[in-house]
Length: 123
View (cartoon, rainbow, N blue to C red):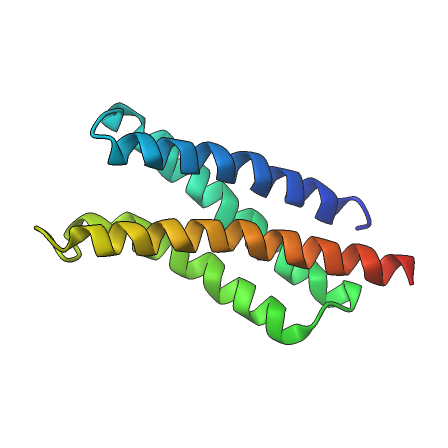
């Protein structure tokens, strides 16, 4: 279990950054053929965050943080897969920004959990 969290951290980092890049391409008005890949990477990030949170319980990471990460890992794909139906028209940018913040937050939560687990192991 000592190597699982660092591996999940790297999965979240790589898949998250690539998904963010694809999302920015979509905002630019192109690359919609990559939408399935973007969604797949989002699922990978969410599953890795969920697994990391579950493993964090055994690494003495704060339970509140881990519960937040579990909820977050469920909200990200929910919003992502339904965002095209939310606030259509001129206000759709609000959902896009919200989805972007959720994705960045998922990466950040993964970093925080991994860092705390690493410090707990060192102590």
